[in-house]
Image 1 (cartoon, helix red, strand yellow):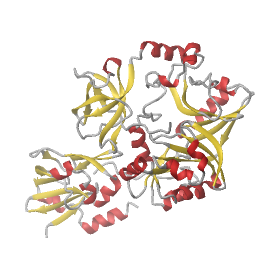
Image 2: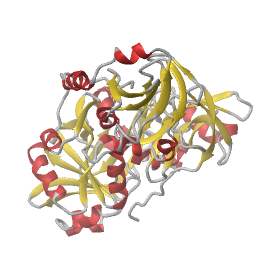
Image 3: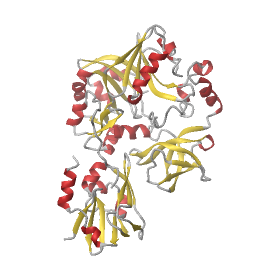
Length: 372
Length: 125
C-alpha cells in the first residue's frame, strides 16, 4: 500500500494544547510549521459527525492573532483589504482578504472592531508575511501588536449550550460578533464565528490558561476534541475556502465568488490593491469562478483533479475535494469557466485516467446553521 | 491452514492452491483512518508484482494497494465496494480486496512471514 510514509516532527512548533492532544491519543502531523492533531482515536468520520450533531473543540492556536492600535486604523487598513471597515460596528467581525496589485488574494482573514483597536485573525501559514505586509504598508502612527495566545474553537449546534453553562452571556451574542469576557475565572476573548458551517465560537485564551480552559470545555457532556482532518471536511461541506488551495495570490475575490464581502461603498470608491481588476471582474463577471462540484458516483475527486466541460475540453481544476460525511458522498470545490458555472452544469472529472460524471452544485453542501 | 505472507507496503496475501487472497493489514487500515471508497480492478486484469491493484480512499487521501505478486485477478470483493468501512473493521478477514491467480508461486514464498512483518512494523515506530 502506498503513501503511508512517516513524517519527521523535528523543528515543529507546539501550541499550548500540544500535551493535551498527545494525552488524548491524537495522531500528530506537521501543519503550517506546527505539530497538530489531524485526528483523535475515534477518527475523522466520528469527529465530523460529532461536530454536526453536538459540539467539537478545535485547537486553532496556530492561527495568527493581532491587534491594530491607533487613530484611523480602520481607514488605513482599508488600503490593504476590500472589506468595509469604517462601517464596521463595535463588537462586530468581518471576513475579508489581503489583496495584491493583481487583485490576487494574499490571505483571507477576519477583522473585528473593539472599543479602541481592531482585532485581526489570519492564517497560520501566512501570518509572518501578513504582519510584515501590514507593518510595511500601514502608517507609522499605527501599532501592530502580535498576540501570543491560544485560540480554541468550539463548534456545533450544542456549542452555545455548553459554553453558556459557564457563561450565560454568550447565548445573547449574535453571529460575527465578539466580546472580552471572564469565563470560569479566565480572561478570554469570545467571537461567535467559525469554520464549520455550524453555530459556534472561537475563544482567544492566554497561553498559560489554555490547557486548563480546554479541559473545562471538554468536561462538558456535548464536547469532544476534533482534529484538522474533520475541520477540513466540515469547512468543505460548508463551502468555505481554504487559503493556499481554494484561494491564492493568482486568484481574485471575484473569481473566488467572494464578491459578497465587498460592500457597495468599497465597490464605488475602490482604494485597495488590485481594485480596478477586481471591480471590473465583479461588474462583468470573471472569466473563471469557484463553484461547488458534486461527483455523481462514490469516488472522491481530490485537489488538482482536471475538470472537463461536456465536450471534453479542460476548463479548470478541483481546489478542494474529498468525502463529505454529512452529505454521505464525495464533494468538491473548483474553478470553472463562467459559461460552465451555472448550477446543474454537467462536468467531467479526470480521476486516475477515467472521466467521472459530476455537476456544478450549490454551496454550501451542508446548510449553514449560524445563530441569527 | 493456508499460509499468509506480507509486504513492506502493508498488504497481506493468503495462498490457497495457486490463488492468493490479497488485502491490507490492520496496521495499514489504522494508518489510513476511515475508508470511504475503494476502487477494484476488473476480473481478468493482469497484475505485476508491486504494481497497482486497487485504490483505497480515506476521508483524507487516496492510496494505492499494490499487488504482492504477479498474476491475474480472478475475483474482487464486492462487499468492500458496497461498504468500504468493512476494510477498517475486518481488514485481515472479510475486508479482503482481490483474489489473484499467481504466475509464479516462488514470489509468494519470498515475501515476509507474519513474524518478520510484525518486526518490520515495530521498526516503523
